[in-house]
Image 1 (cartoon, protein in one colour):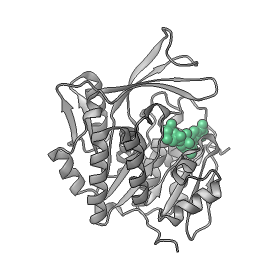
Image 2 (cartoon, rainbow, N blue to C red):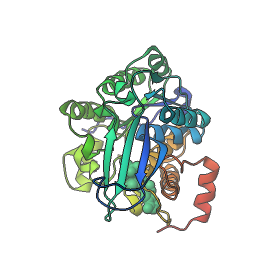
Image 3 (tube, helix red, strand yellow):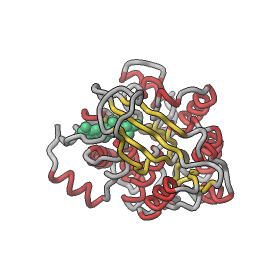
Image 4 (cartoon, rainbow, N blue to C red):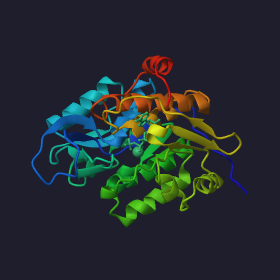
Length: 327
Ligand code: ATP
Ligand code: MG
């Protein structure tokens, strides 16, 4: 028997929070395989999947907070100032005297695949812990969004599990973007905590094969059916330049064609997409309309260089939807 479908809690219950890495991103300016020879780079840009996500929530006027860590350096200041300016509660970002801000170097291959060099575990991002400021933020939150990338940080895993328990106990909800990165999947504990988050999720936002990884089945319809049976209320599948689809128990599947844009930098599209879908739903928008806005946010983001440079306000999304053709 399917369990009761779950949905996301309204905004009145408290802010959307996330936990995880704040990074600077430094991008190769040429396409190719990795970083095995000297090459030109551009950056630093504010980044980290949880940071991009929460910045997009705040730009849509959703109450938003992040539990994270940066170093006492320019990479940290650049990020904290951006988040603060965009309206994110930065009170639970710890500033470390001992560890530098994390970083990600990224280079695109010809086929669109990405190679990363991450410095997360041995950066301030790797030191995330349940500080008093983090506890205060969790206790007033209405929704926890979990980025799979954060589960590779041991301290963040503990905060995530604490936040899920606390927020659900007060009637709040949970979403999960698996965001699996081959470079970060090195740890059995990360996979164990992934399963715990999946079991608690009301909304799942996978992209591509992450749907199959989450369900343990490699056919789309069966994977969706299994996850819905397990009690996930809504599944929104991201399909890159093919758009996205929405699935739930008792409503027909909704497909949303992608907007036709010139892709400059795809990093961050999924994070802006997820933040927009969630925030629109928490504001009471119906799934189909939230999906359209999320597609617009993802598409708008890929037209800007830098993962956090293309976050959108609601007015920008409305204008973009009105003027941009679909694929
Ligand atoms: P990432 O983890 O790199 O941030 P993702 O794999 O989680 O990305 P994508 O499927 O790449 O997520 O992108 C999310 C959404 O953004 C897509 O479902 C689509 O709506 C939109 N999008 C992404 N790329 C494009 C594109 N080239 N053209 C139009 N829309 C796009
Ligand atoms: Mg993703």
